[in-house]
Image (cartoon, rainbow, N blue to C red; front, side, top):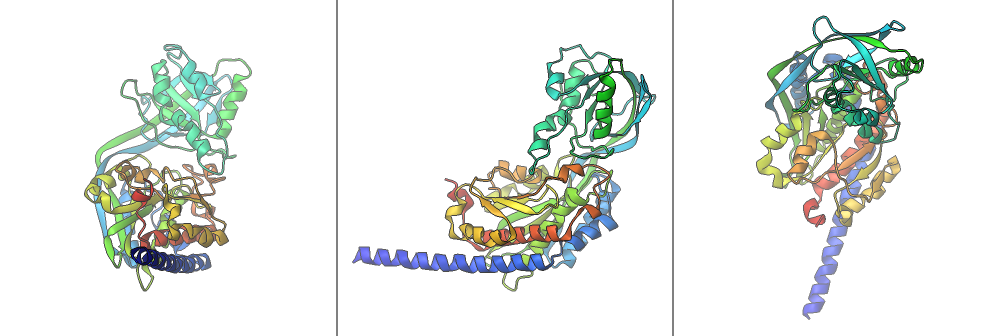
Amino acid sequence: MRSILAASAAVLFLAVNTAHAQSIADTSAQLRDRAVAGSAAYPVLESLTTEIGARPAGSPAQKRAMEWGVAKLTALGFQNVHTEPFTITAWVRGPESAEVTAPYPQHLAILGLGGSVPTPKEGIEAQIALFHTYADLLAAPVGSLTGKIAVVTQPMVRTQTGEGYGALIAMRAAGPSEAARRGAVAYLLRSLATSENRLPHTGATRYAADAPKIPAAALSVADAELLDHMAARGQPITIRLSLDSHTVANAPAWNVVGEAVGREKPDEVIVIGGHLDSWDPGTGAIDDGAGLSITTAAAKLINDLPRHPRRTVRMVMFGSEEMGGSGEAYAAHHKDEVAKIVAAGESDEGPGPVWKVQLPKGALADPAMSAMTGVLGPIKVVVDPTPSTESGSDVEGLQSLGVPMIALQPDATHYFDIHHSADDTLDKNDPKALDQSVAAWAALIYAAAESDIDFRAAAK
């Protein structure tokens, strides 16, 4: 009798669980269709780029962006809207210039790297040591670059993901310190970009504690190739470089938060978002205005449901991703509730349509998660069975504390044509592509928030 009762209970549990998973899938599909029909993403993005524009962390514009974020989340109907302040060392760009002075005088298009020290007021004029790859620079002996400007012209490979960028990130982040260890007085690199125009792409550098700090800047792709052509002629090349910048200690920054509060388990939270800060050449429309707007619009669709999901969906506008600090600040502020943070995900790779989703290990064994294959298929999104390993730098702090990651991969084929450059403007965003991304985020995040899945337990 006991075995019959146990079997009956198991059948009943399976039936209830399957019915619940189907209900979740039905609502996820409705959210998908509403987003595809037109979401709030483009209006939010247009508002941010038009009313605020560029917003480097620690700048007056970033404070206006924080105020904009509070007002926007409030107007969109989120609950518990608030800011979480922290401080950073802000880097402020000044006038910059570079030119070849010999053998063929020409202007060079550059942007100083974020965090770079300035040149002396009179600038630096020196012969260059040109390396076609970063590995060639690393192979140069200590002292071999004394008194020279190191130049690395290795091109970035275009890929659908950020792999081409990731493969060369050390060239920008660590390159200045490596050049300094070999005696260089300044460092120039070909922009980490796949662009075909003459706009340089900036980005942060990180000085090593055990190396001199030397001025560092990115050349436009065209100007890096120009130096390659000059070097092929065999004559010494001299460049004059002038970079002005300064830092501000303990500059204020903010993470901006709003919630769609869960109806049954409000203390169990799924964190999503993008970063509110941007670099200064453009208006931060794709990096990361797009990601910020996509996740805001997805959370709004969930918040607008007449019956909220069981768990809380928390939207975070991270305040200092480009120069770092916001992810660490968020994790520190919420360290005591980490056990209740069910999962986290960030959108920070542009406005291209989402084409792939990755979930934590073991998640696809849950009926609600496995149903996402059918929900996302109609909008050309595949559910990759490979477990997620990351989901953006602003949630790395949570990940280090054990929070599972949900990753949605947009098509980044053309993202690095634009990002970190003056071309990062509103017109580079396709409203329909934004809506497709919102559809994927809303459908998936709702399913995770409505289900009972424990991603940590599933991974064991």
